Image (cartoon, rainbow, N blue to C red; front, side, top):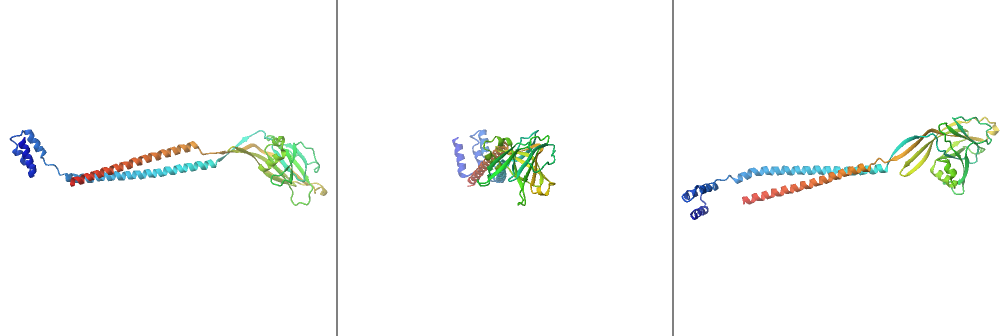
Length: 353
């Protein structure tokens, strides 16, 4: 064994071919050792040629993987931008619908209306008559110019106007309005005024929700001031019969409710058959009646659904977190591939050196 080791070291030192070693050691070594030495001295394939064939293939795969990863990251960045825009648009639409509710209109049919209050401001005019009639049956005027018997519930209120100074007082004659809409109940009022110095003459009136509220109020003047602030004023002129058909609109929304009266009016000329000396006394005629048995109810409906908005935002944020997680893993994978490529390159350079 000492002889074989010495011969092998001598061969390595002299750089001789391995094919001469086995010839000198056949006598002292068995067949298995010879076969082992021959196997160890078999010529190996060219490493440079193998590395030259494998490097382009590995480099191309790495480049394709990097390009594919970059494309995926760009796609997920685009999806993230779309998700952020969708979240912003969802919140904006929710706030827009919350601040601008939709008006829902419905109609409620009633047999009778609550008696409204009709406040008339005759000024210097005199109330001649106030009568309840049914089925549009208005009898002809009898002895016009005289105060006739009245079957209306009226009340006179004197108060200071809310839009005038405290020294000027207003006189209002408040009449209990019609209630029976099925039998077409109406109220016919007649006024007269003897003023020849005016070019135009009219009487103002106001309709408010409930006559009983004013009748039961302890401070009627303050009640009428509040009504004048909240309700509209209309007028009817002398020498005509003004037919006023009322309709009721109730508006509710955001914790407050309001009542509004809408009207359709028509005017018929009064044919004055009185003697010329009596025509200086101008006459006013007005009829109040309900138009139909329907109350128009207007409600504010907020179409913005908070649960739907929350669900959309949750989905958007889940997509954002998923995209961020994928982008982070993709970047880590790119860094890992880059480090592996650098290690392989350094190994090749070491082998070449």
